[in-house]
Length: 199
Image (tube, rainbow, N blue to C red; front, side):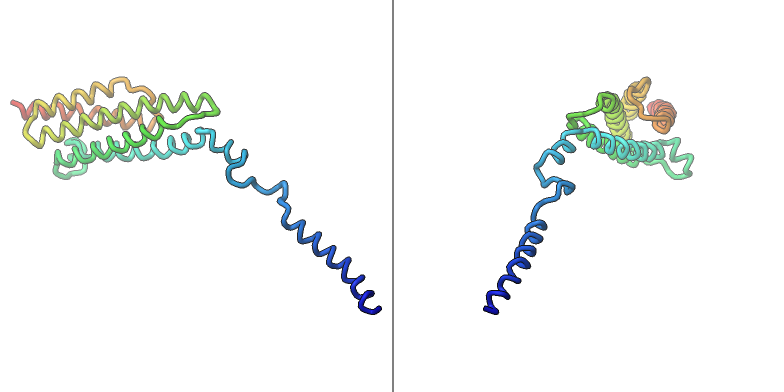
């Protein structure tokens, strides 16, 4: 008789414990969706965030590499009071070209923009990166030709780079505009020096 009374007391306690345990297993509506559900899929569909992050990082990186290349032109080396070396000019130009190539390839793959203005800005910036790729490739070619004593060829490469910088599209800001102006000045000086070496 005592056993039955004790069992009747235990039964409600066990039922309460089971309900509490079951409540812990039910997912809350405020928790994030598991992988593969709509919440995550929607955030991955947009290329806007990826573009904006890449845009900001690449601007800083391209500016740094462009400035470094300018420091290795004859005029830049003279300002730093160090010997000018065409191999250093070639090396820094190739470094800039590689970075511009990489950013261009990454940017062109971005799809599914939610904001049209971001897509348009991406397209303009791709034009700028294309210009930088060409200019850096030409300057690397000039440095290489100069190292081989082909001063006429070096001059031609430098003139091609200068022509590409006449009216570049998609310049992302004032800092880049100033760097482009510095590059033009450096190229003018370089072209004159190659003319003198040809005589």
